[in-house]
Length: 195
Length: 186
Image 1: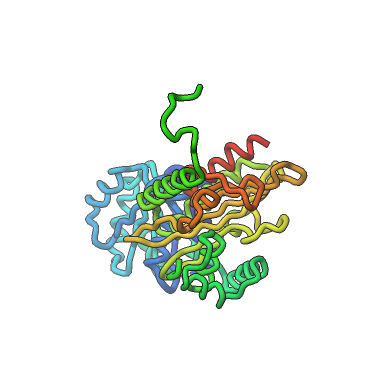
Image 2: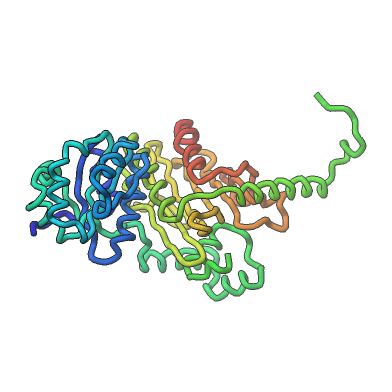
C-alpha cells in the first residue's frame, strides 16, 4: 500500500474547503477508535465548511436508496462509510453508478486502510476521481499535553501564591472566590467536580 | 429629565444598589441555564474554525490549530488559548494587526450530549502605550457575596479591581466584539 499523508481532521476539512464544491476525497480510519475519528471528522467538516455533515453506511444501503440520500439534500457534506462488509461486487456496482452519485456538496469516502486495495481494484473510476486525495485520519492536535497542563498550573500557583492543595481545600469549604482562573485551576488538577 | 417624585427615589441607598445588582446576577444566572452549546470538542472545533477564518483576513500570522487547547475531564472541559496570566507577548497569544493580543479560557460542563457555560475570561491586551492597557471579559462560575462590586458577568476596563457588568454574551459573541468592534476601533 502506498504511503498516505496522515492529517488531523481539521486539516482534512481545510483541504476539502480549498478543493471547493463537489470534491471527492478518501479518508482512512486510524488503527484505534475509528468511531471517534469519524465523529471528529464530521465535527470539523461542519465547523470548517459551515454546512451540515452526515454519515451514510455503504454496506447496508441499497444503491437506489444511496442515490436518493445523496440528492436529498445534495449540498451538505456526506461521509460514505465503507465498512468491512463492502464486497467486491458492491465496490464494482458503486463504481458503475459513480456518475449517478454526483452532487453539489463534497463526498468523503471513509475507509479502513485495507479497503484501499478493493477501491483500486474494483472501483477504478472512483479511485481515479479521488486521485491523490487520500489521507489517514490522525488524532486531533487540540488536546492539552501533560507538559502544558503542568505549566499552566505552575503559572497559576505563582500568580496567586497558593498550592493545589490550598485551592482544593478552599473550594471544598466554599472559600474560593468565583473567578474564572480558579475554575480553570480546578479543571487542570482534575477537580472539576468542585466547580 | 428627572422622573416624577416617588418615595425613596432621592434616597437611593447602597442596600438598594446591591439589591439591583443581585437582581442582575439572578437574571444572568437564568440566561446561563438556558444556554446550550455542542459537546466540548465541537465547541473547540467551532472556535478554531472561527479563528482560522479571521486569521485569513489578517496580515499577522496566527495558527489557531496550534494555539487552541482542550482539557476534558468527566466533570468539566477547559478550552484555552494563550497563557493563563498575561505578562507580556508570547507565541501562544493570538496576535492582531493592531499589535493587540488575545488570550482566553472557557470552561464548559457536559449535559445530555451538549454543554453549558461555567465560566470564561477573554483578555484583550491593547498595543503598548494605549489606554486602557487591557479589556477583560469575565464570566464567574457563581455569584459573589458582593454582586455590586463583582457582578457575575463583567468587564475589566484596564483596571483589575474595577468590574463593570455587561449582558451575557456567548463565547462567539465575545469574539465578535473583539474582532469587529475593539480591533476595528484601534
